Image (tube, rainbow, N blue to C red):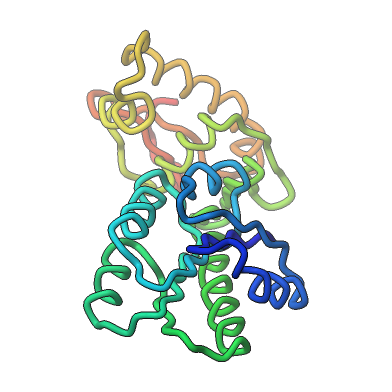
Length: 233
């Protein structure tokens, strides 16, 4: 697990980096003047530590940008300032924790691990969906029903996930298109029918052993039929 440390003074980051390495982490240190958002995108760290004497607009902007670009890993601010306003600004910018200096290294490690554990549990919950006996694991893009499992493309998995959010309820073609293809040049509503067809072909094995199927509800859209309703297939 790689921890990204963003330092005011990169030469001062050695002791913190060494301590984290002794705890089993890999560590990357960058100067605060560099772009930590780009570095985080390149190395995908498990956590980001901003080690700064006085967190300012640049730090808060970096936190916001990381969240805006979809980075969900824990962000901890280690600050030499104790101002409540700094803590509030940091948390509002997307940081998970604000730790005032001086701090006990063991406390930092325990708080870091607690944030990582919470993040990993939340991530697993987001990546795994279950409706009845049907399970979709987005991480490996596979659907499971009993002893049957099928491999899916990323887009097929996203389509199935959307239908699983609304089992036994039709989702209109337009809503599917907007969520999965909205704004993508060169596509039309027909792409929904194409991918419904792809998903049905792969789903046939699950349907054959008594699992759900992808139903067409005329005039209303498509739905994941978990109960065998008499809908057009």
